[in-house]
Length: 271
Image 1 (cartoon, one colour):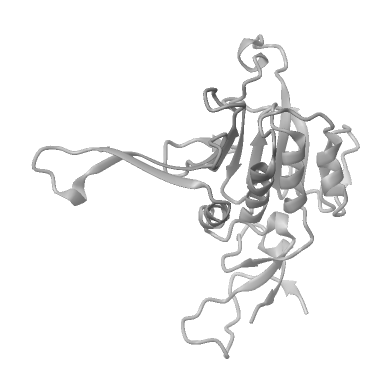
Image 2 (cartoon, one colour):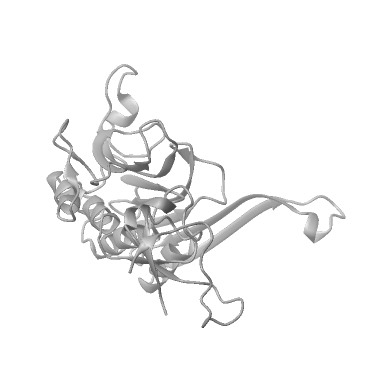
């Protein structure tokens, strides 16, 4: 039997004292990141054989104790075996927000090892790690990760296959049946990096290139629960891989349940 989640979880009398409860939670698109936005994605990247590099730069005064050192920047970068793709953990770095939420991951790809990023995708806290991991698996398997792919209907088809509804106001958009989660092809927010020259050369009053956006809100004027932004050149099949995972009807395991969407979730204890 499934029931709404509440802030006070019942104690499983068969569980060892102090053991954390694990729940199978759905729908996935509202299940959050389990309070561990780094771990699930980093584990997936490790399984793909991506190299992890960590750089810490700071400032140390003469005669300063090690514990007093001021760390100014910390970068964790995961690089694909062919060096054409990378995923950067940016939450511990310089603050960068999307929809008033801190961005946790930035994923990028390029055409060759001598070029800059052809496109980038950004994921805030609250985005289910399973969806980011499935995007990265598709990226890792992609033969041309920086080659744009037309057919934007791939993204809408991916979510409508899981019961989401096409947006009546535009052809390239869809929402879940509760009208909380959305995917839409529209204007890209500021500071989203892309190699499309229109990103830099367009006039201020002219619409820029469109990219896929995904977000969740309990109401139109409510704070965002999560957000993801794909720059204009991200191949649509990669966005579709993310959207298919995000909208999947398969439950996910969670120890930490987001309070904002808790009453919209269903759960059952595991084990």
